[in-house]
Image 1 (spheres, one colour):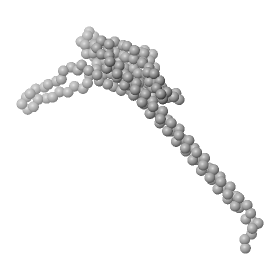
Image 2: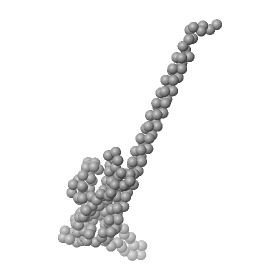
Image 3: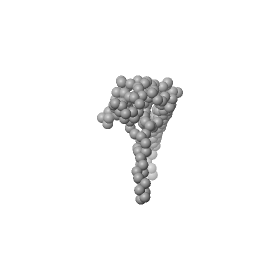
Image 4: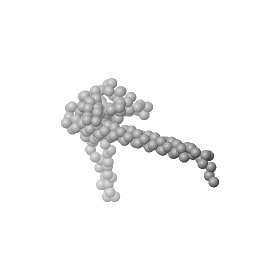
Length: 193
């Protein structure tokens, strides 16, 4: 025979344990969903900042295509003619590098986009001095040159043929994107024109 007096309240006790377990499971699920929402929001911010940075790089390339010749011999707003002297050192953060450039040159700032990002760009011609690229000087304006190629002759002794001196110049474009939630993103690209 079962003693009913001893079993009174056991069902209530088990129900409370199950209820606490369900509550803990619900809190864990809520926290997981909350974290997923935060992560997806951060991914969206990153993608929007990257798009804005790409738009800044495209605007810089469009400026280079629209301006040629003597315009590119000297500094202008958002453009440094002797940019080879301004590399980023490994000891600098990107923010320090940008503030160094911003303190000396005037980056071009694009209007704020629909996502709330503002992109600023600075173009650096990879030459040692201002003036016409590859000019003999004095002093000579030397630029980073594209790789040269040469071909050697066959066994018949055709000789050595080297390509002519390049007329194209490398440009380094640095884009800083400032966005919502105090986010800052940097994109750097090099183009040959």
